[in-house]
Length: 337
Image (cartoon, rainbow, N blue to C red; front, side):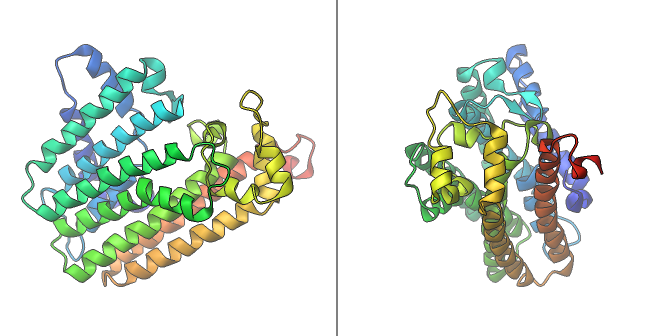
């Protein structure tokens, strides 16, 4: 759990328990897969946003908030299972992925089961706007994943094309999660719009930082496969920046059988200016997100969201710094300090 959302702990645990009970089945085989996957649940950002915004101008969220939070996490978890199949992912949270342990078919079908459980929550909702929000999430995810597949190996993908992909795959999900919370809180329309805009902008910020971590962090610090994007031809912002430079094109235009060493790529990302460029882009989206948060006129929630933004950048710096230190020669002055 992210520290700034600690005040939501009991509701988040209720949402997690709901996910676990939703996957309670008679089959030991399915149960074992579900238990393994649930042990890899990460920071639970999307359900935390649902719960935080459900308290907009309220001391506590409505009774339905934990189930709505669980609904978003079920959809997110399903997308991760499917992504691991597409990207041939091997590790999450320092544990092998379902597709590695059981197989691709099993991972896809478990993802489908998670999606079906999210629909069970939706069937109990009477608010058509919440139904519309979940539709927006699932439709955008599917379109984004297909658009990303279409551009695998596309060295001509530009920044605008990249932003469109991460909007569909990540930013819309964050936006609709915040909106679902605001809808549950029965917030006025203007604050619903501000909630959604915060989520959209922080979703861009989050994904840019996550893509940068894929290049500059390590498996031991991040807990999942690194440089998977590069190895599978996924053109993210750091690579797009580097492909605009001669040395970068030479480094990244490699045969599939002989990818460059991870340390060499990470080092070039830092010295080429790509690292700083991506950070500045992320900061721009973070500033836009906080500008939207100010329109919520809820000081407590605004403080939480400011802490959340600060956490995203501190996480980026912490993981990248740890990797940079591990790459230094043992006899370097900095490493010995």
